[in-house]
Image 1 (cartoon, rainbow, N blue to C red):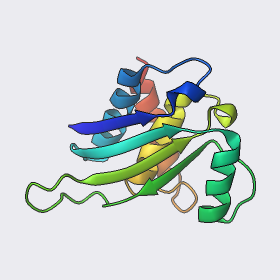
Image 2: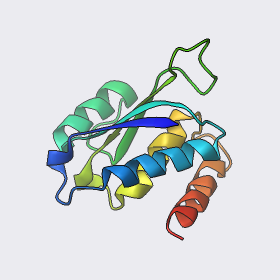
Image 3: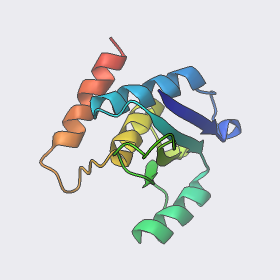
Length: 133
């Protein structure tokens, strides 16, 4: 099971369904063969995500979603819970929160649309279609 912690809901104009955020995280993880771990999804304002974007990617200005992987996708030894990482979403710059959640999870799980041959975005589309069916 993927343990999903959702933070910063007060920033959302329409509060997302926490269960739906968790379901999308689990769906994306299962799409990559990961079935356990912890992830935090935090909603932040444009100023905060701009600071993170500059500090961690060297890019000025806000963006829609950032991912900060932690332990990777390999199972943790023994009974130690796997920490997948953090997803940070800026509602002001996100057209579709569900898409941002799935996109962020796929990054946590090792995918990168900036260096692959379209696999990440193809899987993202497939997962979102399945989620909305």
